[in-house]
Amino acid sequence: MRILEEFGTLFLIVGLALAMAFLVILTRILATYTNILITMIGIVLFVGLVGLVLWLLDKRSRI
Figure: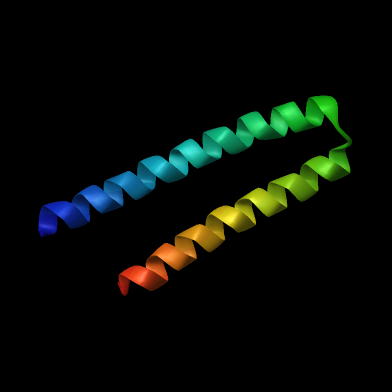
């Protein structure tokens, strides 16, 4: 059971790193093709969505 907890923590860290990399790529693409205000709104929505998903996963797992 301890191995599963460690694997879950590692998976969460890797997932957050991938999400940050995706956010950087998304920011560059949006900043290239759209207005900077739309880019800022997109970043806030994306980070909020990732936070909501992590909060729901944390709430369901009863940590």
